Length: 251
Ligand SMILES: NC(=O)c1ccc[n+]([C@@H]2O[C@H](COP(=O)([O-])OP(=O)(O)OC[C@H]3O[C@@H](n4cnc5c(N)ncnc54)[C@H](O)[C@@H]3O)[C@@H](O)[C@H]2O)c1
Image 1 (cartoon, helix red, strand yellow):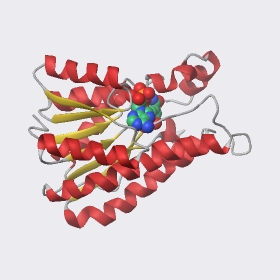
Image 2 (tube, protein in one colour):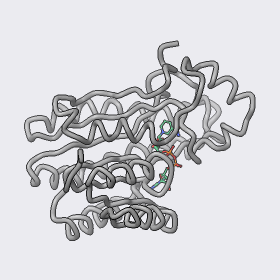
Image 3 (spheres, helix red, strand yellow):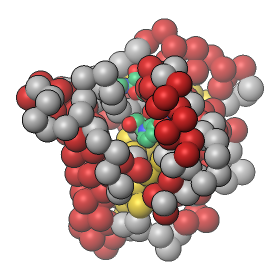
């Protein structure tokens, strides 16, 4: 078991990549705090883990709220007394209203910023002291291929580009305290976040043409990358952006 007795917080665990990661991490022996703003599917994720003999707890949180993030960390520490891995997966992609900067509202920019970048910042700010107290560990942030190549969703790209830069900078800040900080940049993954996009035949065709592997990812394929970064198999990896995009960024 690659995460035996590691205590892990995964935000965004009610759906998609976060859910797949929570289930995979628990199967690898982790004690999983599945955090999300959506309660019902979050509880279902925890039930699924427990039905396979795993250890998990759901905590409801809006990662853009400092107060709620602090409460999430406190509740998690009260339950498990330590923190080894923080996976900041929660995010939004408002594809219906995002686009070129001149066309999008300030609110769309701010919403992406508040959940994706500030949410990651808050979880790190209040989670990392406990990782340090536990003797070190690892942080996994969630970016996107849009932070590496231009796709045209400027608000989303800005929030995720900030995560790539912050990840590098944090690796420098916390390496001496034995905290590794990395991020993942997925291409197109079959999850509810881009359901609207993937129901659009023209866009689906365009994205498939942009992807050398000729298919979209399953959430479990991103969870595998997260597991690598969470486990000791990546013990000398920090500050990196692990691109998991079916080759999208090489075209
Ligand atoms: N699906 C893709 O193609 C893709 C590609 C690149 C990056 N990503 C990133 O992966 C991450 C996970 O997305 P997904 O594809 O699994 O989508 P998803 O919609 O299935 O899951 C996102 C989860 O985040 C939660 N969430 C959203 N805002 C929150 C908030 N303020 N507080 C707490 N929880 C919140 C949602 O409730 C949901 O459960 C996101 O950060 C997303 O930007 C996804």
